Image (cartoon, rainbow, N blue to C red; front, top):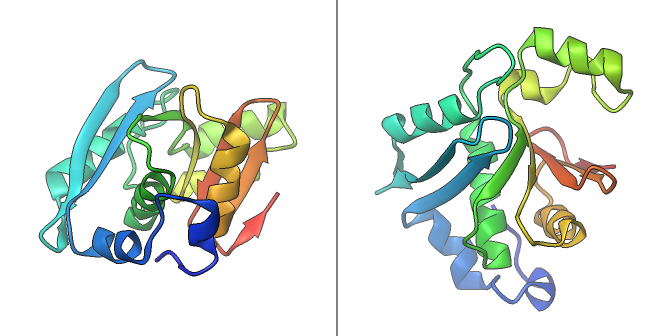
Length: 171
Protein backbone atom coordinates (compact mmCIF):
# COMPACT_ATOMS: atom_id res chain seq x y z
CA UNK A 1 0.00 0.00 0.00
CA UNK A 2 1.29 3.41 -0.87
CA UNK A 3 1.75 6.00 1.80
CA UNK A 4 0.31 9.45 1.12
CA UNK A 5 1.14 12.78 2.61
CA UNK A 6 4.47 14.17 1.47
CA UNK A 7 4.68 11.73 -1.45
CA UNK A 8 1.89 13.50 -3.31
CA UNK A 9 3.95 16.69 -3.55
CA UNK A 10 6.64 15.02 -5.68
CA UNK A 11 4.29 12.89 -7.77
CA UNK A 12 1.30 14.70 -9.30
CA UNK A 13 -0.54 11.45 -10.13
CA UNK A 14 -0.50 10.39 -6.49
CA UNK A 15 -3.46 11.45 -4.40
CA UNK A 16 -5.29 9.98 -1.41
CA UNK A 17 -7.99 8.74 -3.80
CA UNK A 18 -5.51 7.09 -6.19
CA UNK A 19 -3.85 5.28 -3.31
CA UNK A 20 -7.13 3.83 -2.06
CA UNK A 21 -8.68 3.19 -5.47
CA UNK A 22 -6.26 0.46 -6.62
CA UNK A 23 -7.68 -1.90 -4.03
CA UNK A 24 -11.27 -1.18 -5.02
CA UNK A 25 -11.06 -1.16 -8.82
CA UNK A 26 -9.56 -3.10 -11.68
CA UNK A 27 -5.76 -3.18 -11.88
CA UNK A 28 -4.18 -3.23 -15.32
CA UNK A 29 -0.59 -3.65 -16.44
CA UNK A 30 1.24 -3.80 -19.74
CA UNK A 31 4.59 -5.48 -20.41
CA UNK A 32 7.13 -5.85 -23.19
CA UNK A 33 9.69 -8.63 -22.76
CA UNK A 34 12.93 -7.20 -24.16
CA UNK A 35 14.40 -10.66 -24.80
CA UNK A 36 11.49 -12.39 -26.55
CA UNK A 37 9.70 -9.38 -28.04
CA UNK A 38 6.43 -10.62 -26.54
CA UNK A 39 3.99 -8.07 -25.17
CA UNK A 40 0.99 -8.27 -22.91
CA UNK A 41 -1.62 -5.81 -21.68
CA UNK A 42 -4.25 -7.08 -19.27
CA UNK A 43 -6.36 -6.67 -16.19
CA UNK A 44 -4.93 -8.92 -13.49
CA UNK A 45 -7.19 -7.90 -10.57
CA UNK A 46 -10.89 -7.12 -10.69
CA UNK A 47 -13.88 -7.12 -8.35
CA UNK A 48 -11.71 -7.79 -5.31
CA UNK A 49 -9.80 -10.80 -6.68
CA UNK A 50 -6.80 -11.74 -8.74
CA UNK A 51 -7.68 -13.25 -12.12
CA UNK A 52 -5.99 -16.64 -12.42
CA UNK A 53 -5.95 -16.70 -16.24
CA UNK A 54 -4.31 -13.28 -16.32
CA UNK A 55 -1.75 -14.32 -13.70
CA UNK A 56 -0.83 -17.35 -15.81
CA UNK A 57 -0.27 -15.07 -18.81
CA UNK A 58 1.96 -12.83 -16.70
CA UNK A 59 3.87 -15.86 -15.37
CA UNK A 60 4.51 -17.02 -18.93
CA UNK A 61 5.64 -13.61 -20.20
CA UNK A 62 7.98 -13.17 -17.22
CA UNK A 63 9.43 -16.69 -17.59
CA UNK A 64 13.15 -17.41 -17.73
CA UNK A 65 13.79 -16.80 -21.43
CA UNK A 66 16.96 -18.91 -21.34
CA UNK A 67 15.32 -22.11 -20.05
CA UNK A 68 11.60 -21.39 -20.71
CA UNK A 69 10.90 -22.24 -17.05
CA UNK A 70 7.69 -20.61 -15.81
CA UNK A 71 7.16 -19.69 -12.17
CA UNK A 72 4.37 -17.98 -10.22
CA UNK A 73 5.06 -14.26 -9.96
CA UNK A 74 4.27 -12.74 -6.55
CA UNK A 75 1.05 -10.74 -6.81
CA UNK A 76 2.56 -8.21 -4.39
CA UNK A 77 5.18 -7.50 -7.08
CA UNK A 78 2.43 -6.89 -9.64
CA UNK A 79 0.74 -4.56 -7.16
CA UNK A 80 4.02 -2.65 -6.75
CA UNK A 81 4.19 -2.21 -10.52
CA UNK A 82 0.55 -1.12 -10.64
CA UNK A 83 1.06 1.40 -7.82
CA UNK A 84 4.17 2.71 -9.56
CA UNK A 85 2.21 3.13 -12.79
CA UNK A 86 -0.55 5.02 -10.97
CA UNK A 87 1.91 7.12 -9.01
CA UNK A 88 3.74 8.21 -12.16
CA UNK A 89 0.60 8.52 -14.30
CA UNK A 90 2.06 6.37 -17.07
CA UNK A 91 0.32 4.08 -19.53
CA UNK A 92 3.35 2.75 -21.39
CA UNK A 93 4.33 -0.89 -20.93
CA UNK A 94 7.02 -1.90 -18.50
CA UNK A 95 9.97 -3.20 -20.48
CA UNK A 96 11.10 -6.40 -18.78
CA UNK A 97 14.84 -6.94 -18.53
CA UNK A 98 14.49 -9.86 -16.12
CA UNK A 99 11.53 -11.47 -14.40
CA UNK A 100 11.71 -15.01 -13.09
CA UNK A 101 15.16 -16.62 -13.17
CA UNK A 102 15.75 -20.33 -12.83
CA UNK A 103 18.55 -21.39 -10.48
CA UNK A 104 20.56 -22.33 -13.60
CA UNK A 105 20.23 -18.87 -15.14
CA UNK A 106 20.86 -17.10 -11.85
CA UNK A 107 24.09 -19.07 -11.33
CA UNK A 108 25.16 -18.29 -14.89
CA UNK A 109 24.54 -14.56 -14.42
CA UNK A 110 26.16 -14.59 -10.98
CA UNK A 111 29.32 -16.04 -12.51
CA UNK A 112 29.34 -13.18 -15.05
CA UNK A 113 28.56 -10.30 -12.67
CA UNK A 114 29.03 -9.31 -9.05
CA UNK A 115 25.64 -7.56 -9.23
CA UNK A 116 23.67 -10.84 -9.24
CA UNK A 117 22.85 -12.26 -5.80
CA UNK A 118 23.30 -16.00 -5.25
CA UNK A 119 19.92 -16.15 -3.51
CA UNK A 120 18.18 -13.66 -5.79
CA UNK A 121 14.47 -13.04 -5.27
CA UNK A 122 14.15 -13.44 -9.06
CA UNK A 123 14.34 -17.20 -8.38
CA UNK A 124 11.21 -16.95 -6.22
CA UNK A 125 9.17 -14.84 -8.64
CA UNK A 126 9.56 -11.91 -6.23
CA UNK A 127 11.79 -9.58 -8.29
CA UNK A 128 11.75 -7.81 -11.63
CA UNK A 129 14.11 -5.55 -13.58
CA UNK A 130 12.32 -2.88 -15.59
CA UNK A 131 12.49 0.31 -17.58
CA UNK A 132 9.94 2.33 -19.53
CA UNK A 133 10.56 3.57 -23.04
CA UNK A 134 11.55 7.26 -23.09
CA UNK A 135 11.09 7.56 -19.34
CA UNK A 136 13.82 8.72 -17.00
CA UNK A 137 15.08 5.68 -15.09
CA UNK A 138 16.24 7.83 -12.17
CA UNK A 139 12.70 9.19 -11.81
CA UNK A 140 11.37 5.62 -11.93
CA UNK A 141 13.81 4.67 -9.15
CA UNK A 142 12.86 7.68 -7.01
CA UNK A 143 9.16 6.84 -7.28
CA UNK A 144 9.81 3.22 -6.34
CA UNK A 145 11.81 4.34 -3.30
CA UNK A 146 8.99 6.72 -2.31
CA UNK A 147 6.59 3.75 -2.22
CA UNK A 148 8.82 2.18 0.47
CA UNK A 149 7.70 -1.32 -0.55
CA UNK A 150 10.46 -3.87 -1.06
CA UNK A 151 13.92 -3.54 -2.51
CA UNK A 152 14.83 -0.96 -5.14
CA UNK A 153 18.06 -1.20 -7.11
CA UNK A 154 19.22 1.40 -9.61
CA UNK A 155 21.44 0.29 -12.47
CA UNK A 156 22.15 3.58 -14.21
CA UNK A 157 24.74 2.23 -16.66
CA UNK A 158 22.42 -0.59 -17.76
CA UNK A 159 19.37 1.71 -17.70
CA UNK A 160 17.02 -0.31 -15.51
CA UNK A 161 15.49 -0.45 -12.05
CA UNK A 162 15.17 -3.58 -9.92
CA UNK A 163 12.07 -4.02 -7.75
CA UNK A 164 11.38 -6.85 -5.34
CA UNK A 165 9.02 -7.81 -2.54
CA UNK A 166 11.73 -8.35 0.06
CA UNK A 167 12.39 -5.98 2.93
CA UNK A 168 12.76 -2.31 2.04
CA UNK A 169 16.32 -1.45 1.00
CA UNK A 170 18.02 0.47 -1.78
CA UNK A 171 21.24 0.23 -3.74
